[in-house]
Image (cartoon, rainbow, N blue to C red; front, side):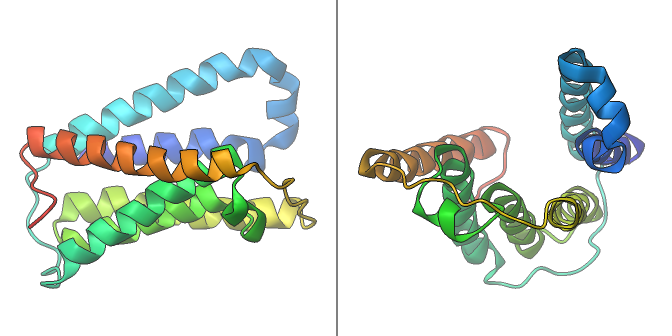
Length: 181
């Protein structure tokens, strides 16, 4: 339990550091990237180990349709991650596609899992993403839309999303979680 909570807090703190303490982060310059990256790596490790170790009781009974909604939302989430990096058409229509992807990822998993470990992990990530969007919008109210991307990037984002989705599903199966029912 403690490892999972620490992992979520460390992830959130490392990501929010730039927003909550911009002067300190700016003073670190490029030399600050290494320590932040290490903190993020450690946070992911803590979240994985903490989640796997926490045999938590159910906080709620997920709906029967939760896994189906999870699979659909995960596919959309993967596309938003890819679209963010490749600056596809949807990245010109929404300001925070990656963070919205994290929100969808979190909601998807909360619909499919009702245990306390999932509530802490996915609920924590959901809160972090919403807070991040609010802080970014408050600090930078003017949004410059990215330039139009070539059609190849649109196709690449769609194909990459399907590929990553399949890899993630396969990893879940290897870990003993059946994502498809």
